[in-house]
Length: 417
Image (cartoon, rainbow, N blue to C red; front, side, top):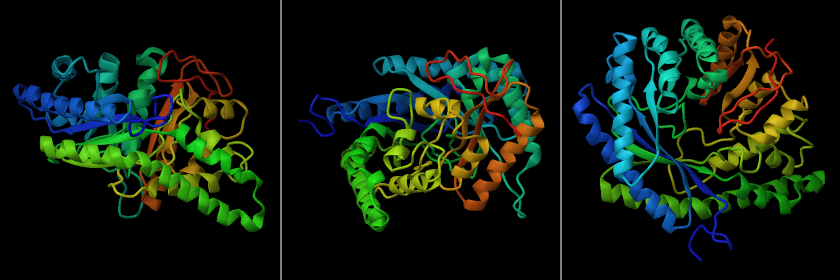
């Protein structure tokens, strides 16, 4: 049996993201070489991971700030440049054996660049994932002006893209480092060297480890010991997969000369794997949102950060995302948690307010206030958090969303106080 495989020839762990971080220059003639190089690295990684028994799900390119290589003097010139970059990426994917490569164009660094984002996403969708990194001053006050501008982007995307699904491609980052392998938070800093990273999808494996331990049945006197055993079991199970994957990544780095930045050990959620809610329940919590949820979220985050033998990057924590996790959506419908609870959980885990549907008539000022709240937590606790909200035009709190994207599940619209 090949490494990573289960008895049926499949692995409970998948490589969710192979992400290449690529520096692009304003000379569009150099883009093909840069993108082709990234695709060669990706092709080699996919082949190596496949030989080990792992499926590679998404292949991604993340660039330096788009204002450094696109002409952003007008919307028209920005769109023209982005169209050329899209053609370059698509051609490179075909040349690399038919790879479908998703694209993030880095961060918007100025108010003028941020103003272009809604129209760019409306025109190019998944070839235009964008973030904005919002800062804090010496007094710990989050930049209110940039939060307001980012909130206006969210508001416009809600109306200029079908069902507001363009908000899937935009996020406000707080205390987020470069080289996060996930979209749309990922970006490469100005002048930083190219590299690659990987992220995993492994909730099914984690649930398989926790379920037999029956942690909910432990008496109080044995609970600490039982949770210690569970922590070690989770770490060892993750390392059984990260060790061969990291070894392969380092080999490819040596062969290609492109550095390996590291691994995001988060259990990336999706509609097709065990819900994060199931992991919380396996720790003895009656349901996600009940008393004990914070403790369980902190425990799982520590487990993700305990993985040895690799540089952990990105979030490497518990991802709570309402529109990508069927269990989270069901818990919202049952009224088990709200936006304030999500913010509270963010103090001990990731990822902030991610993929949260809100009423379509939510004022910009309230969206900006949620961003400032999240940013305050991020900088206070020195942890990366993001805000990705979906105002749903025509819907009120308690209604159910009507998204059609394959990436999203439908969920109850949250109230914003």
